[in-house]
Length: 168
Image (cartoon, rainbow, N blue to C red; front, side):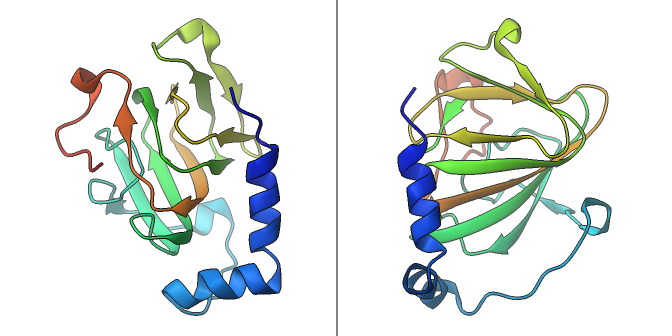
């Protein structure tokens, strides 16, 4: 797996005035958002959200930017209980925070339950560009925030695992 240090440096660079101004030009000024995980409404189908797995039982809400276009974006993704995401990758590096529930994440080209690590609310992980990862929820839903620098997309390690509506 590639080092996550370059991704963190990129995130820090973007948080500077110059980097953030460049990202804001693409989508307009950032809105002020203050909410607990319980206050977040994530009710739109994720079927048209670029850069997510498109597995049924997901809802999404764009908080900032557009993962289909160049620039900074953040998407909230809610996964219903008992959802499995087969190995996939994205062309952009991303940073993920579990906001509520438990999310189980692993890396590799084949789904392997023994490689899953349980992340409770407050847990974080990175998705380095072009690195296959997989995950699941168990008896409860999970809410995660995904931040990356687009354009994004989704490529399944095994194309037979891809839901028909996945956008590349």
